[in-house]
Length: 338
Image (cartoon, rainbow, N blue to C red; front, side, top):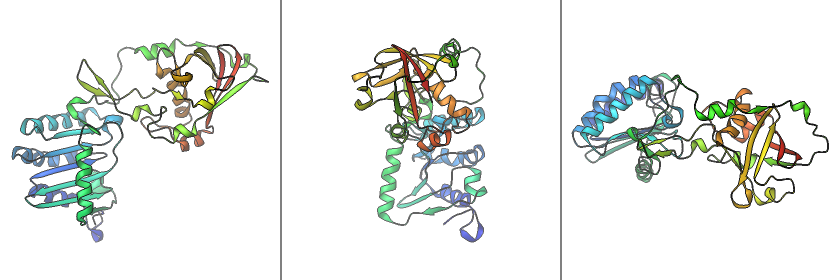
């Protein structure tokens, strides 16, 4: 056991230093990494690849949370250097689901050592924080973990760094993009002009879809979109959402079918649409992000949702509402409350 506490195994960084020196192959799958840890072991990664071994690093959260400009440059350089030495080596990012595990696999001849625990491939994870990382001694568990790593590094769960568009937070935008222009051009009205007394309504419960990690409230965490022009995969837009209604909802008398205008409880008018089989898809027109900017924006303003974190049932409970209510005040016109 290695905890970064002397009397409980000491610093995990010392284990990594020894393992890297002896390894002919290395696979590390981690949620996060730090610049100094990558730089500390960069030459070891490259030496292993140079000698014909597999040298792989997976960053489990980078595709969805982004990397700083400096870290992006360092990781990109490491990936390119590894690929030049060995086609089977490189840096990868998780795609389709965030990866938050920490698995380290080193091999040398017939020796195979695997460590699993809480230690990220970072300074804080390997010597700063109190962590708990264990060597795997069970052959059965070792086999499962080797198979697991093979899958994690496959195209089913990850994409090579050079084929992924990684967000660099803080980069200034020169011009407003199309979605921002659409949002800023939404018409406004006075919510007090609508009386909700005796208006027919239908309620969309959000609990069922919020409990699914890749629900249509959380499409950002699904697989990214391949950009034909660049050949790279990019994350889905953070604000892209839609609601998928079941038959019980769509068969209600006041459920909208086709285009309608949603008059929000905070004074905006959002063009909306239901489409698909039995009009089950509830989305904003022109861009799926308009609905998301409104709904996720309310959660963010309340301080219960941080960017690049999923909308969960717990988030909705902290917000104070687990449903959206649509009040129909005339055909094609609904008051939307959340």
